Image 1 (cartoon, rainbow, N blue to C red):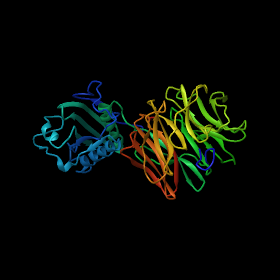
Image 2: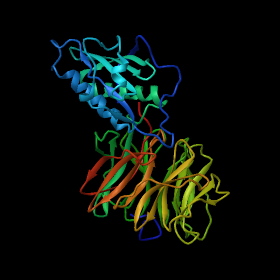
Image 3: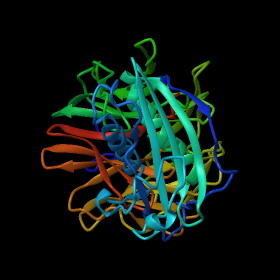
Image 4: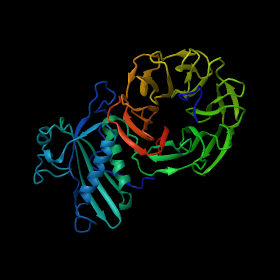
Length: 440
């Protein structure tokens, strides 16, 4: 929904892992990152010990490998990585996978400890990795990771994913992508970037007003609205084949909305009957079902993770607000009352909460609220406009766009608004981020 009008503006991982010594501790969540008073958990990461320095490409290989593990673990937003200068370990007394003097690590405030051995042979890399609970003196993870040297980054991502899985019960977002619109002036295209900020790729060539990109649940397709042919029409792009087709070209507005969790239907806002209303399109037959019928403007539909309800924006009460209805259009309920302009709802994949952008003190900020309209939480407080929140697949992080002078920025933060990091920034405007599924 546009701010100055009533309708929207215009690894493959090759490492082969084999268990040794110990795998994951049995189905136990060590870190409750959903606890309301969650704070970063202190972890010490000892440099991986290079076992064959004579044949390694560099004597610093172990340190560089460890630094990459540190980078991705910090990127998760859940850990305080302790400074190496504070370590008390005696390398003569401690060997990775051997006897750990836990008192040395507890003394510097570590709750968890990561240690490892690294080998390079030819074009292959092998990393033996151990994760310890310092307080309990327990081994939580022991695993060997193998792959090609050229894919070292994928090995480190897998290590960090397994650490997160062992401690939190969730593997994190390292194999996800975020799509967004980048534009010069009013015209632009859709780009895709990896969760770590690498691999930026342009995926459309419309050079037009582009809005509302949406991933399909399987990550193969992007739907979006483009003005390439002079008016707003909905396209479906096959990212595997690089092809696209127009799927909604009715008179008036054709605006892409969210995909159903099963990928069989796409929500649309259409004005083909005179007023902007929400429809569900069955993608196999392209059959439409009208879901709203109201004098107000209804836009920005977002499906609940179970597919039973839809959050949307309507100005039927006089100003844009967030509403919820059943998937068939029944039982409509307004859930936002604070603020006079609330839009862009995004339903958490875990259920329970909806993120949205709302006007606060003359700026747009990111909020979350529960499905009943209670427990409102403001997440951003900056002097810039923060817009278009979207949840990560785990429901534990949120991406959003910000207007920075004449340019723009895509940022990621934890679901409580903390540990914000910039994913991508450009002198051109970057807007409307959408988060993919986890790719394997």
